[in-house]
Image (cartoon, rainbow, N blue to C red):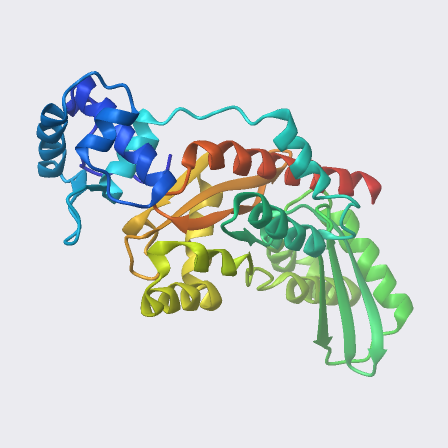
Length: 356
């Protein structure tokens, strides 16, 4: 899950080390407070003395898995510890049927279009997780072409309407050098539909370029106009956007009590470029992707983590979604929740195709 580098792995630790580390992380996730040896000895049935636990904690600190805040005798897990935890210790709990039903109810009534679905997904994730939620809008280039229509607006201006099988619609006004009748524009649209069907938009770009290079396009005026309009209609459609919901949930986390730290994080969420880059990585990954601390390079802080998953229509990856919160998020609870939401979004997208 997520990013790995040369950091401690489970094989480097004894069974007792792992038990103590898991207990510390469990307590820290729940309380956000440094964890002491006496607390561990009382609360987790480790069957070892506080002195032995202190020795283990000292070893874990030397390995870079724990650190001691200046104002406390207890220890807190480092991002390295949370990485080890999600890779090797965490026990992911199956999502209860009641939780699945709550997610599904969040989509009733069904959203009208893809943009509404993306917005609703952010709201559902934020409400159920109590964290900020992020959803990347589906990428045109990865969706399958359905049809294109051209509408004559006035002399030398044509509206191109590109529709994909995922229900995405792109409208673009194109300038043309010579006036074209609506009847000719209708013929161009039908021609492109026959030529380009069952390809992704990215493949459509390539197919149009190949057709333009063919000799027959040089002497067939209408054919060439159709290809040129089609080429311009599908150019640069992947600007990409991210919906962010529930930023106010960050205010409830003690990690973000520092106004400057909170401002940096909120600025990164507002600016979106760093966020888009991370979500694009998640789109290329498989399963759940977890980014902890500096792995995400978001707002330059070790206090932030992300749990992400891509969502698909069939086998076609369209985007990514997930939650952002402190590194001490309850990963074992969030992983199945994010995973199921991504699966449900894919089903809803496939259902919207069938209705079209």
